[in-house]
Figure 1 (cartoon, rainbow, N blue to C red):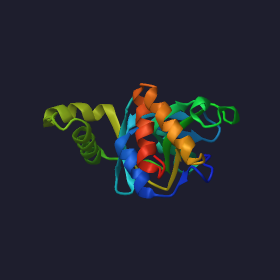
Figure 2 (cartoon, rainbow, N blue to C red; figure 1 turned 90 degrees about the vertical axis):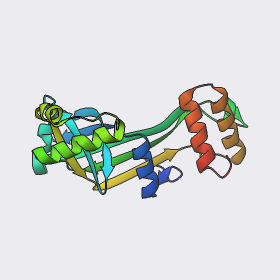
Figure 3 (cartoon, rainbow, N blue to C red; figure 1 turned 60 degrees about the horizontal axis):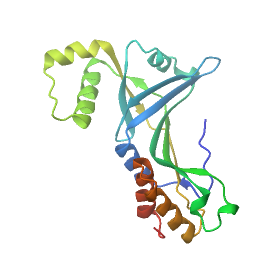
Length: 203
């Protein structure tokens, strides 16, 4: 599986990809096995060095695909950044444009490795510290939680990044899109407008 990313929108900046993952850690994890229906899960993942860490419910059969080794076709974690609808009305020449969607996404490919109990405990603590540092689980709570999860580490084999943010449009059109997004009075649209302002020289 690969990400369609025309030259205008493809990104090779690893730091930009890591920043998106950190800001939007809730991922779609897909494991495709030849001859079988793909397994899909939605979960938070943290980038730690050159690997993603996370866990699945033990009742979720997805993790069992990780143990099938070389027969796994691919596992991909998809992270979505800001995204919003873009109207042709916002361009200088609306009749020459079509409705579209601006968005930012990062695809991380690798082969997950199941963690032992000690590593699973460490992974659980890192996730809770990242998302809820005020919650301090005691050891009894951790030991009660661990049997219900399967933790894993996925070394990063490939990163594909696509920021489709009107880079193929003129400066006037980009400013028009930003104005239209801000006027939409929508949180997602405002996030895209902010992204365009920060990343575009015409913002």
